[in-house]
Image (cartoon, rainbow, N blue to C red; front, top):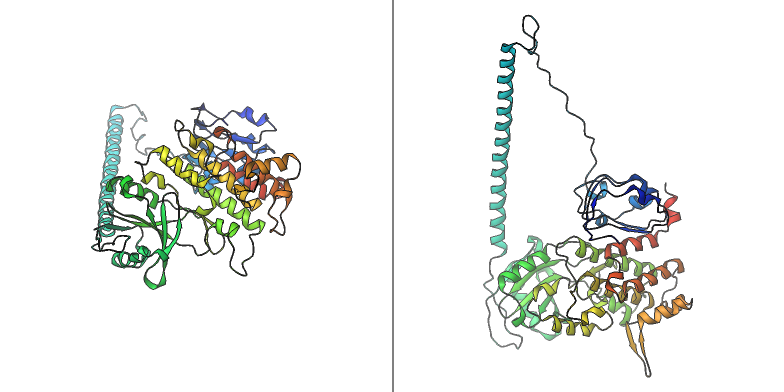
Length: 490
């Protein structure tokens, strides 16, 4: 990997001579120019990441570039590709405008003073006209921008109007606290008062559906039978000021991806903070893997498990690469992977650590010990900066759990089984298929074995040895569609 090295200049064409090159990671540099066409001919190249450079021009033709994910190209404004939603256009030079009056001098001399003065005068008028046109365009754009800002400001005032309702305390006693309810979408088709009034049901213990590192989750019904999930954040004395809280939640509210749970709004008081999000009746991945499923619900098949692994990787890659600074999940595990009606994964609880800046890093690390088996080893060291690599470790454990159906740590009468060590041992003995979940009827070894190995790479004890989530997503796509099959298309 050559990422984050401040490399400048163009991508060397000589890289195409590395016929056995499998991974090319040049992300987060200052490379410019076009991508060498010869790179498209590298048959063994499986992963390419050129994001966040200054590259321009078209993508090379070839297997790897035809199937490249958008996240591997973003941050290059000069690149044109249908993957980036920017069509390549031909630069056609403008025709020259000849002056028909330039040769009207009686003797045909173009250098006469009269013709020269006439030319200068006409040139001056042309420049003036251009300046006038530009000024008119700027004024028109200014009027449009002011109008749009006024409309946005009016909408913001309506959405952020503090609610006149209040929530009582968890003890059920009357302890009103005036708060502010903010909904990010007007499509919620219900009034603010309805949300607050129905949120009273949160105070009922029967509405609780789960507890996590950052708080307790409740199920609540709003108008027309619509069900939502509401998370009550942990103790209020560590929550930052309202302005800072608003700013961070507004950022999380704008995050949109098919594999991420959408944040619909929030309720804030000095004593109580609630986050409103979508509710998924299918529960979490943990429920499907380890809890007794409802009668008639079959175990997850291999295609379903692979879809969950790939979707989760794409969601995490979006959080890591589409925002600066990256949005770190901090707590990747099956209980935070929800499933929709089609068993598509939806990552929940991402970025919540940004809302609790007063929480001491050591205390935060201790809280993650509840997620024993998913926490990266560097979380135990306060001197290390927590970054995306912590999420990648948790993801590696998650896909091992998906394949094996076993928990990350299992306690027996005489020993303790660590899932990562167990899988690594069986692979080294050539018995990888013995660790596969036996509830799956069919699981092709040519897909299962690479996924297991990928999980072990993601759980490397050395953070720098773990791939990025964008690379993980690309590798999974290659595993699902082998190279020979892809080459038959061309």
